[in-house]
Length: 315
View: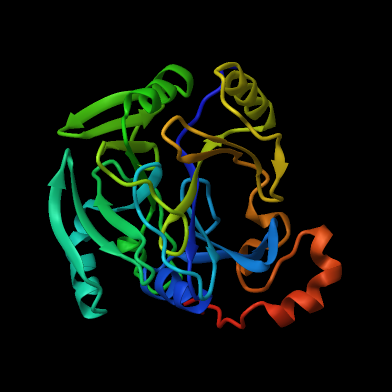
């Protein structure tokens, strides 16, 4: 079977205070907190996962909260905008919700075939809500937003690049994306058949300063692969293409390889399985601190050093 990348698996960003992050993404945006765990490379830091009811790949936005850290700088070599997908008829609902909660926004405006609303989270992370006619996924129905207006998952991501040609070549000649649209310095690529969750825009910004990863910026974007066998094939092909690729890393809920694309953005290719129900029942996702086996003996210490947080309630 030929290997494929169906679209985005997850996006990981840096936050400031974890409680503020939970209140914005769960209480305001209405996403489900599907996993409360720690950064496996820095276990005294939380790793927060938000998504739909089951935490399907293509819906997961994750954060490493760094309380007290300085703000980052958005720029070249970064994912500079993360775009969520909403139903076509939910634009008015979200305009009213943003206004009611005093979240500054711009739009709605048209881009290509979609309407979108732009705003930032409390740490300055750039976000968009994109209304798309082809959206058929179900949102989280027990959160703070009615299911009919709930965020469905990702629409896509925007990469800011000093020059776009080498990144474009990687996407199209190696990773199977297709150039579908262009407007000014924005080039749109689609994985597989395109649509919500399978879109990446390249912004060619030769005068942009390099980005600096810290609070309010994206750390990496992960692309989906269906299984371990296809991930192995991707790793071999990427190495043949001259990229430095990590060995496969077990992240418990998925397996990962990492590499930097030619413009400097950190890419990951992550497997769809095993998923977030491997250590919690679906009904209990995100309701308690989950640790991988290697950190269970340090649970008491971690509970003491990690900031106390109040978890969202389900309707």
